[in-house]
Image (tube, rainbow, N blue to C red; front, side):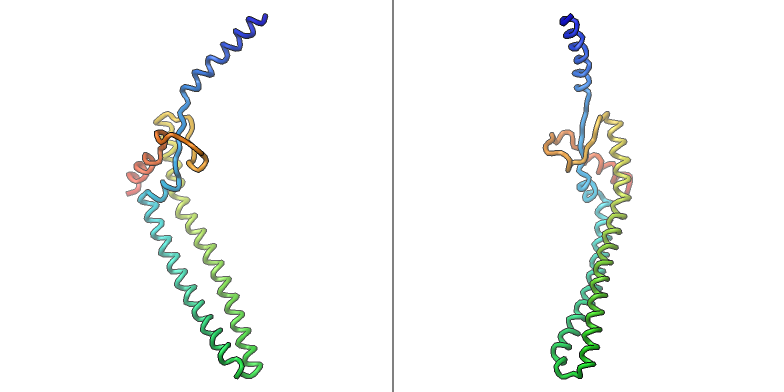
Length: 168
């Protein structure tokens, strides 16, 4: 009886060994695919232009706030109490508005960055699926999920080439 059980279990394991040989796993570095692709570089340039514009607006407001604060510090002791209090309230209100504007612009920039990369990611996902099917990969993982791998299974360069050829 034991002989048949051992023989049965051995036969069950043989197909599993054969299946393991057919497994093909690859990986892609999505961040590099985005940053090295032509569309990713264009998106980064557009995003950097938006960041510079937002920074310039915020710097202008910050400079004005610093100027008002310096004026208040210098002229405050010479002013009437009510006039000084009004300037302090105005300065505080403008400072709160500056902080809100800064927070709003940061959130807006994050959303714009997400939108810019979102379209690229959708196209990259399609390409990874196509490469996975055509090259008969069992699984393609994101690079940041892998501690070690052979560079031979990195499909990032192939994905970038296909993506650039489609988005000229």
